[in-house]
Length: 133
Image: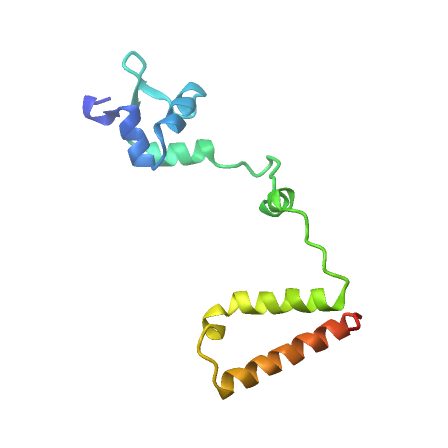
């Protein structure tokens, strides 16, 4: 083993794209073996592949799916308003938030006609949902 093949923890972290706080536990757990234990240096050749093999998930290990994590972290769903005018106001505020650049322009005939159609569509959606004015 050549002296040039031995690197420090900081150099290892830079090569692997990890933080130093990730490398130290990997050394302690034996996932990154020391090349020289006295000075705590790591053997450089094959470092990336060895680290990837020792830290990758195994096929037989239980996996917590990303979807399950998202479900666990997602907030409570918002309840829809049951009052006609409140539901219409919710829908209209959503439309205005999503396309604020379009609605913030100076009104002209085209914009007024578009806003009228949008409001009619939203009113028909609220009626379809079973709410009456």
